[in-house]
Length: 471
Image (cartoon, rainbow, N blue to C red; front, side, top):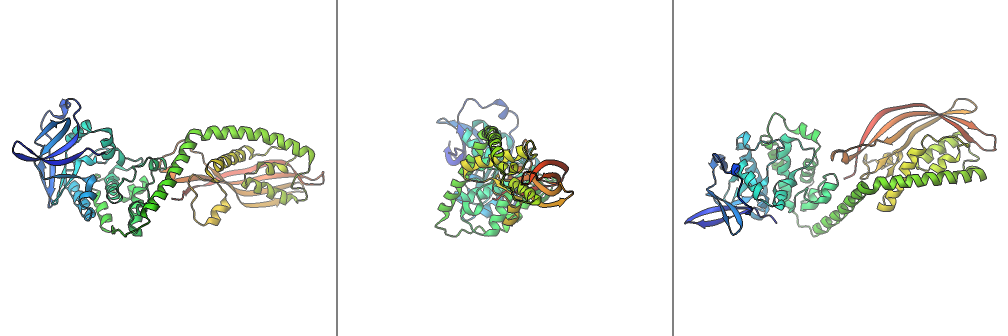
């Protein structure tokens, strides 16, 4: 529960606005009270007035800061007090922040603890100085710090754009009743908030698209939208322009809660899936790969010693085509079917690892993570399911070089393994496009075609793709 709130209180015959900031927990550090008191600001009708607190009061185990002002309403309570004026009051608060001296809110992150921002019932805003903010931080509970400070943070936030992002979060909070990055599941799934239309019930497509795009904007796009020569508060005019173009009208929707609950259920499953793979994925894959390799070697030895391969009766070109088709299917047994004894499959380790990854995830998640280039093209979407990998051969051509040799030229799409990834990188998968050619040596002295040699001729990365995951 948020304990930071204000109330009007009569003390010694005078009415003050008492800002309750938390429980009394020892003496206040001297450096927060020594020297000249820093001024805050009261903003009304386009004018700033310096504002100082009257005193700090400890009563009944609670600590309050007394101001000679009307009731100060925390910006986080904007929907409770101003449900029909959310846009207007946020624009007024934005104007107040822009009117304050540049140094008043300047910090390396660009964000403002929301306990520094208040609205007045009859119009106007109050902005508290940094030293008072430090005093609140000292007295506030961990829950209050999370509500007013930590929940606005996210990785890859460009400081000059930070307040545009934070004010968008405040708008989302006012209309949804919860902050966009408040749920732990949102943080675990690359900080992708619940879509604005689902969270709020506001179905205007333009409005939803604008809010969702701001909240998920990559840092490169943030740099393009605002100037680094200006402070975060000066760049708030960008947010003002966006807000004025939005429609925040709610339409009565009997299925809103049902849709939100369904989305939260799916989000929790996705977060649990990521957490499972983060903790146990590598161990499972390594164990399964080891077991599969042992089984594969044993099974292949038995098969080859007792029966002709399934490719018996195929022409050399068909055998090579089937080899690559098996590679796209992650079927290592089928790939090795047409290899003569002792011939090394250059893709064995790669295909085996991807096969095990795919099957383990299918068993635990009912989700096939492997997508081939053909499947990506056929979908026509240009996106992949969340955490899927792109792997396979495309544009295969087979040319006869001699009576016993055939040249295969193709493009191999292979996933790029990242040692570390940012939240921005978690929004897409990366795959190299490798222009490759192999020389196959063919023998037909057992009544069927066998591959007796595979020689690499060319392997060159010609492109690196970044394919976004479906949202």
